[in-house]
Image (tube, rainbow, N blue to C red):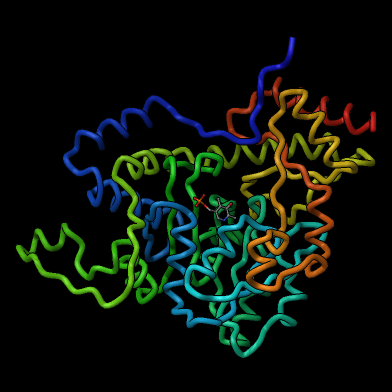
Length: 377
Ligand SMILES: *Cc1c(COP(=O)(O)O)cnc(C)c1O
């Protein structure tokens, strides 16, 4: 009999999550209510950031960051090529040009030694992506952005719960963006957050998610005023109270989930580290990794991928390098050969199942299957 399907990631939903969502549904405010502000306040306390703004997705959060730094058409933003497409798309939404930087071989994080060669008079910012959940080298990144007067943005869509010298992801850059898609560490169904210590950035983002209207409806109600002003083009990127209630309740279990992810990751690493053909990514420190993904490199990845899927194991590949996608090749003169490390990595990487409720038996099945498949190549 075939083993049951094991996804690479999935959400954790408890009875108290269900209760929280039902409470929001009957609270009188389905959007723009107190669950949204409570979620933002709790998130700020967790990160210890001055400001948090909840939005409808991680992509919206990244887009809001691009608005906050006031890109002019043609301004350049350096992004690692090995990321989800949204990292680069956010730059394009604001008429910027994403400039693709290669990644480091062992961690697949942006290669800080290759950033300077991409800096031009048009460079405005760097987006660092905490690939798989491991924090980038923010110290070196800040040295570069300070030297050239750039803004540092962290795409923390993988790294919620990670920290560097007890400073959490979300506080290591000028602006940080999170995603609450169901495969991430914490979910609201769809949702995102921007954290910052800058009041100016916060003010822009807070308006941008609501059509750039200066006063939100709750404020107008309090002031008993109907009028508002709009000075910029905004979006409807609001999150609902139904989603925020779920996020707020999930946040209570975040640290325990991250601890479980690390424990499961350590078990994988212990099994694969001696294997000649299965190579886990290099981990700098456990604290600086919250393991959104567990990524290994293997030979003949496509064969291993197909055989793992035959074993009902939901492996995945994160990611096709962004500069390899047709849209970027035809619009931004991106071409293969631009980021050789990312391109080579793409041929070998495999994300294997990792989520807090992955059982011991299921993890052992994944380990045994992968070792057997690779040994039989
Ligand atoms: C998930 C993700 C996003 C986008 O988040 P959504 O909530 O799906 O819009 C952006 N960047 C990275 C690296 C991601 O993994």
